[in-house]
Length: 530
Image 1: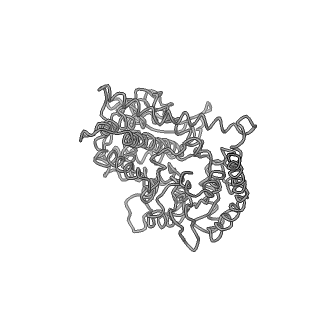
Image 2: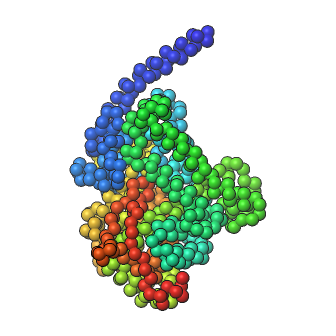
Image 3: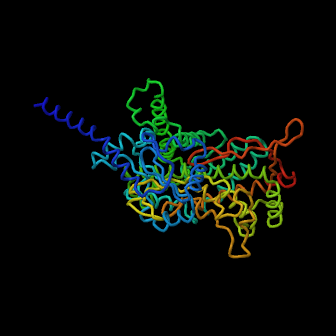
């Protein structure tokens, strides 16, 4: 009997695999009908090999020009992906229809009740994120219909709403002064000072951890996490994404080193996800801890016992603060420094306004924000000119839809090309010119769109830490402008060295390493403050 059963199972499996090519061809033919335009896909790898490994958002924007439509279709990892390249289309889909466009791309477990589809997606869908992260309940990837989604959003709102951000102001001010002192003592290490500042604020808010150096353990851990995420999401970085069946070959086969790399990343991400929470929990249990987001929720005011499920929710929500709250600020501040080195006339005008409004004997504060119109315009232009998340975070449409006469398939990944929107000539005049005056208080109804309406996301998935990020960004930028001049370095012949305006590719995009001079505007300004 056992042999008969085994034989039947084997026959069924062979039959299932034999039918699979027909299923693949049928699905691709059916899905292609009525889709938005896009470059013709390769049979095996789809459009994956056509997506540049560096700054793909520029290629996506160009394809919209080539095909004459604000949305394009790509087949990435055997999955329909819609790229939205205009603000009108992004608002129409991700905000007006947010009830069906606010989900995140699905995990493999979604297809558990559909054997054919489960096998199809298991064989041909993106392998790398699944191998490294599995079905971990990360805040950023949680489905809209997941029971944890509302709990996550509630916790994050409680920790990042405007009223709570006011409570963090003293911490932000203290860390700003530490950063400014670091820029005075070691100006060439400005990358480290900016990273330390952002990490110190969010680590204390999330866990009560105090950062004491630019080489802090948890700050470095955050940097490692960002590096891993960017490597995983970099187009063309993993051969297995082009040829999914490679994952069935042993790791010693030439070209299969990705398996060892994925296993290493999986182990590192477990440490990164758990280390700060376990440290904070240990401090709380010892009674020697600083009040934080984690301590408040592990020891709730109503005194109820936190069970394992609730603690896991707290851990992931704290991790969302940890990872989501720092990297965007770092990217924006570094972009600001680079842009000031390239545009001294903009820097001088902002400094002149700060002196006029604030004077020289103190740093700008949040109370000055409403009176610093040019500085506010400068910050908006930094966010527009160098968006920190050029492709945002992916959405998923929850049912079949149509737009501009095109079919949007159920379950398709939808990506908003924020870089294309911020460089769209129909939205911004002369978009490739860095010009803060475009955002000065309008003298006519034709003022240009505030980029903050979309650089932090769309619809129900807008970043819950917007107010926190904007506050931190304002304090960092105004502090640097008040005390320092940023300029180009000069070579041994006295000629200026113009830094390259080049950015990394990843979920967040940072300026690639560059050099500049950061010098005190005058001892009379810097000494009393720093």
